[in-house]
Length: 290
Image (cartoon, rainbow, N blue to C red):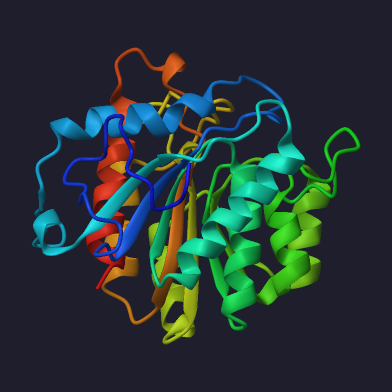
């Protein structure tokens, strides 16, 4: 499927039918090939789209309606099942095409490793790129069981590419001791447990800079988002996550792209995780696309 090809399946609510006129493109990354616990996030993108029909198009958080912007839902990238290396290559190429066309890329995962080729493509076009990373886990392992490209390593790869001072992690409450030591050694900003208040402290430092936002749904407590592969107790509320997106949207940073990953619908028959994810996507569309 081409990046501008019409998607015949269910689309995110309010999706514009014309790629050329769209300011942003929603795309899915159905990959969960390197997960270490429970698979299933490959089905996240399609289900987030399906439940979005239950959303209102108006956001009382941002006082803005989806009709104010044009975005195109391109469906899922056709990734070769079981081949993470080629899949990452295709994701990077895909996002590069969107950036070359002047589109805002909003990706739906899939496992968190999917974010790595996107960050790399972003950095090629934004030399001063900063990453805002929301997650329960550090994702800073040098390798996982010998694999340097794993869902446990994408932020480590980002730090190696961008430098620790350009990567900001929030809500972290799980990781190897060595990962926390690595963060401190490299000058990363790593906020344990909390999100909103440390984020508010960081945003003024990033005024005017290009920023990429990556959200692992497990930054939220399993009480709010049980549908994920590696649930971790002690997380934030949906209210705090929504307030954090508003804080970014109303700051003076320049968000150049975003993703939301690790939604695994099979583990949440209540659908609250998928519904929350769809709402977060709505707020990112309304808050990040000016």
